[in-house]
Length: 357
Image (cartoon, rainbow, N blue to C red; front, side, top):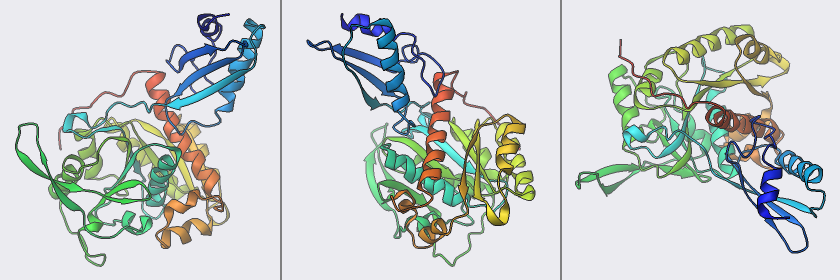
């Protein structure tokens, strides 16, 4: 029995999440047969947030048992390499995936979910940035417990000239940028669309983000200028829509989905926040099914999330003592896997060309 024979035996093992053979989507990286007949199979996951890896291990063991009964004990080792479309390449942003988190209306916990996705993906092992594009109501600094002003660093540009760039703040390993770091918390930001466009472009293009697996963008609520700006600057990996279960929130969420569709930003799916008790439950799941888009998970209306956010400790929602850790982790995994499915199961989203109206 050789390494090649092992790989051939595993050639048609299907990935349980993506639904395609591991070999065909290049997740099957190698196999090693030891002198005692035991086998080690190397699998490369498309994201460190891949859920329940044991299902792959079990599928590999079953295939070897059926096709190579002489094989000894089989172990599966995992590495990960985040797949992406290099969303910001056109403007020099080194992010494999840019994800917009939006909502049709305010008050549904969009910023909390955006921050949770960022810190959850970081906890899984990814390199992550979080951009607060909610210029009129920036809440990421408070949620993350980050304060101070971004520093300025000098770097040599492509043309050899020295340029100044923002140095993002960092909280729990996630790089952060927000207008909230630059204006006092009590000061209102009163800007028209062109200024929003300029500032957002600066935050994306003139910030030293480094190389990121994921850049999460906390969008303003509603259907305004920022979405159009993003669609012009970037080829986003997709958008996540946050809503609460009641009908009035779902109506606005549908408008947000329509907006993203119009500006050619793929919708990764819907998250139901504050599920249960006062707002009911299941509304977002039902609406997602009606619209034929993925349902990414429901997050309970649990006081611990609010308390940790109020205390500037939103990253701690993934601590072992957090009641919301599992549902939020589930959302993070689903977001990452929807991107992987889009890339490995079909064509990458095209970079749209739109005119400002």
